[in-house]
Image (tube, rainbow, N blue to C red; front, side, top):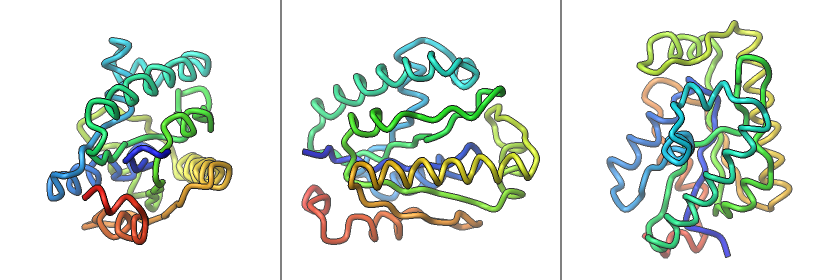
Length: 190
C-alpha cells in the first residue's frame, strides 16, 4: 500500500521548495517535509555537510530518511505529505544518484519533477538564502537531464505516476498535484 505522499523532485535552485511551501500554505491539509531537513535532523549534520558527503554517506543517509518518514506516516497516517526531494545530489565532485530502493521504500502515490531554464536556476542559486553550488549553464543542463532520467526511471520501475512541469515566475504546484491525483485514492484523503 502506498503512503499518502507526493515526492517533488528538481535540482537545487529550480524553485521546488518555494513551490512546495506556497502550495502547503494555501492547502493546510497537506504537510510540507524536506528530505534534507529530515536527514539533517536525524544525523545532526548541516545541509551543506550532507550535500558534500561521499556517495556511500549519501546512500547511508537514505536509511535515516526512510526511518523518519515511516515514523511520520505512522504518527499521521491520514495527513498527505509533500516531500521536497532530490534524485541527484551535486557533492562538488560528482552527481550522486539517489537509489530507486529509497523511493520504493517511501512508497509514494506520485512523483512531480520541476525543471527551469538554466539561467533561472543560476540566478536563484546566486540570490537565495541558502548556500548552493554555483555552476555554469552546461553543468546545470547536465544535472537537469540526469535528474529527469532518474525520476523517469523511478516512475517506470515502480509504476508510479509522474508529472513534469517547468517552473517560471509565478509557478504554482497546484495544477501538477491536481493532474497527478485526479481519479486516485489520494483525493479520498482530502
